[in-house]
Image (cartoon, rainbow, N blue to C red; front, side):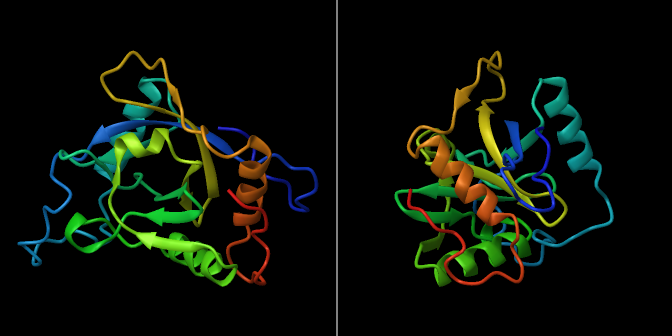
Length: 193
């Protein structure tokens, strides 16, 4: 991964990472008919997340985008998924997907709405990651990490760029603006995509 922006934010480059898709092993609605299953809860066991991160590194990537068996992007081992597409911020819904709600994603979505952006929680097809304006894996620990390459598991890691729509400068500006996700004033996101 690239270095995080400096404390002043002056001329800093956004943190960038590469990711590989790894199957979670269940469809996107696996928890719809079984609300008693502990999907979407934080547990003390990070074995799956640690194994996924280890597999990403073995494959030459920095992080993971978990996918469902029916072709949707879910989240990362320790991060939420945020996608910029057609002027909107989109993230995976909780509930039937069984993913844990990301407070960092929720904070960014609230700030984006306050700045006039459209926000949606909906299933994101894996293929849509490659036509998105930008893709971030976000967490409270590292903030937004712009995902510059996503590899499909099973491929030879040739890598497909996920920055096809917005200009690089706009994506960098948005990524740096997303970093201070708390205590923001409306208008801080700026720019369009």
